[in-house]
Amino acid sequence: MRFGDISQAIGNTPLVALPRLSPKGYTIHLKLEGHNPTGSVKDRVARYLIEQAERHGLLSPGQRVLEPTSGNTGIGLAAICKVKGYPLTCVLPENTSQERRQLLTMFGAELVFSPATEGSNGSVRVARELAAADSHAYMPFQYGNAANALAHYETTAPEIIADLPQVAAFVAGLGTGGSVTGVGKRLKRWNPDVKVFAAEPEYGDLVYGLRNLDEGYVPEVLDVDVLDSRIKVDSRKALGATRELAEVEGIFAGVSTGASLVVARRVCNRLPEGAHVVAMSPDGGWKYLSTGAYAPGDLDEIATAISGTLWA
Amino acid sequence: MPTVRIPSVLRKHTDGAAKVTAAGGNVGEVLRAVTADHPGLEEQLFDGDSVRGFINVYVDDEDIRYVSGLDTPVERDSEVALMPAVAGGDG
Image 1 (tube, rainbow over the protein chains, first blue to last red):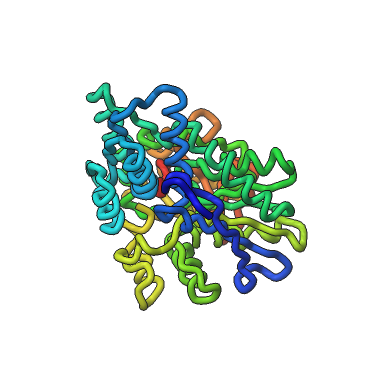
Image 2 (cartoon, rainbow over the protein chains, first blue to last red):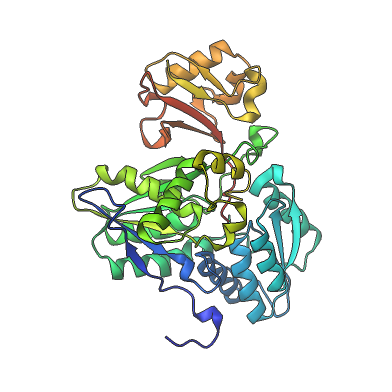
């Protein structure tokens, strides 16, 4: 495989079966998005956000890009913006892991921090304020930009169909909703019997530090009608499955992967015997090592200790 | 009796309790029992007869919108969880 530059080397990630962790009579496969150039599924999204904006004349050479992101989208955007010549400002919660901050800074992004107590909602709020104050900045806004789901509709889903035409169900975490919406719609168009499940991270109380429910937020990108169900997964279960994945299948993944695996195993018995399930693995575990998620020790204690930073 | 988990943003209506118990055979009955015990929650949880949009309700981790809504059955050992809708943390 040979590419002209890093922005073209995105996608075509491995789909790997889990023969030891799949429930008897079913096969779960992980789409290993950590194999993208900056290490996450968000490379696909970042490329689409920028190239769709260029295509529609929303972004001109040298213009600043501004985005609320807790990490992966920012890192993907930072690499793309670097090779395409756009300065980038990322707004991220102040409890974002050191690895992410260092990567963003190395790629030349400017960082603006929002209060940890406001979670991703806080980043969205601060980014909107900055965008309102700077008419020259372009904010792709992954939570509300159709290019997010389109990246998955046009790239992730066709790869799954090509590699596993018999896919019966797809599971992905619920962040912006781009993966479940884009992949889900394309898989259902191809085979209406395909089921789509969202694994929803159950954040610690810190992340839910809203003052009232009116501060709640449902990303516009998420099409709730594409879902067959939505199942929440707490930090302990997600972390347990993530560590099991390394211990049993030799796959070192981020904690969102564990959450999707928990849901994939739970829904197998709703599918015909012999069914193949694809679960999204958004990234590897590298960027979370400093959180202690993979350190030796008691699972409950680790899950409690890191619940404030785990999903950030 | 089923337990109901209260998010931090609503605990001022439950004297700070993160978990309460309430009787009922389905989600609607359980939530009405909770609001009877803690009247301050009524307006927070309901908009007329339906649950407000920015709140997600789960029975044993599954969103009731994809089961049977307020008619979703609740077992005696079930956990009903109320969670505010927030922007995804993995963005």
